[in-house]
Every structure is written in structure tokens, then in C-alpha cells.
Amino acid sequence: MMMFFYELVISLKNYISYYLGRPAPETTRCLRKSSVKKNQTTGAKKFTNVAVTGLVASGKSTLIDAIRRLEDEEEGNPLVGKCEAIPRAYAYQDNPNVLLWDLPGIEGNEVQQQAYVEKVDLRAYDFFIVVSSTRVSEELLYLAIEIEKMGKRFFFVRTKIDIYARNTKQQNFNQGDLLREIRRHFTKKLQGIGIKFPRVFLLSALQKDKFDFPDFLEAFNNEF
Image (cartoon, rainbow, N blue to C red; front, side):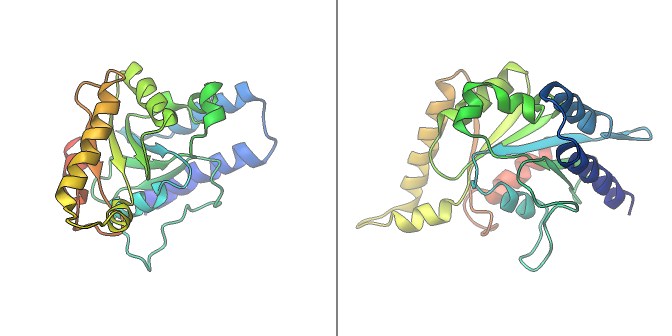
């Protein structure tokens, strides 16, 4: 019950910050930072803030639902508002010390202006899941570099891999070879920007017993 009200307070504060008054950019950044840092402690309890970020429509929200083990008929929407423009916090029942944050999707023009990092206050989070449903784009490499510069860890997750595997079926199709090739490609891209040992997971959030999802969830839980 306490966690429910905690999520409600966080979501409500974010909603008010964005839609009542629309403060100037500098003020917005301060509100962002205080929204996470001031609320990550209830009494003596400090929360680990996990940011799920990536491209627009990459499956971030669906991945969070899968991590939280929500079924299709269960409600996975934020407690206040449904706008993609504000970070939304969710409790993680497998670890009450962890909060999962669904961040707005990153876009190319925001990367060029370094606006995304400031808008979501990326430095306020402790761990990251960088999500893509297609290729490794320049936007995602930018995020990886920024996270690495902060000295923080992240997982790279390629979602909707079931759709890709299904659409790529050809004569003599070997799914194992395809997945290994995709993993090598993503790993090489990340190593090319200085990430020495990238953690890459290929999964479908809708098929939690297949592909890398079991390994991803085990690795995620072992981080905290």
C-alpha cells in the first residue's frame, strides 16, 4: 500500500510540473532532478532508480510490463496521465528497493542539441536499460556514450525479436545463426564507441519464456 501511494505522489508531481505552468527550461531541469532525488528516499529507505530509455515506439512500456510480470489483462499504465512526454515510475514487486522509470523516447533533433539528457535528467538514475526494436541508431549510441561518461551501467535490449525472426525466415533458415549475427552486430557497434563489455539481450516482451528474456531477467535481478 505504501508503494502505491509513493508511485502516485511521484507521477502526480511530474504531471503538475509539466502541465501546470510549463516552467522555463532551467526550472524544468530542477524539478526533474528533485522529482527523482527527493523522492527516492522514504524514511531511511533509498530506492534504486532504473531508467528504461530508447527510441520512440521501441517497446519500452511493454518491456516494463513484462519485467513486472503483468499479464495482458492487467493494468500497466501510469497512475496519473498517459502522456509520453514525462517520466513515469513503477514499483517492482520482485525488489521493493527498485523503481522502474519509463522515460520519453529519444529523437534525433534532441540528441543534436543535447536536450534529451537534460530534459529527463539522465544523471539522476542509477541503472539503465537502453531499448531498440530495430537497428543500433546514432541516438542509442549517443545514450550509451552519455551513460558510460557518467560511470554507470546499462543493458542494451533489442525488443520485438520474434517479429524480426518471423519476417526473416528464408530457405535453410537457422534462427540460432540469425540471433548470433544480430548479437555480434550490436556488440561490435557498442564496442566501437568504447563500451568494452556490453550486455546485449535479444528478446520479445510478449514471449517471456523464449529468446533472451529469462537470461535478461536473471541478469537484471542480479544487479540489485
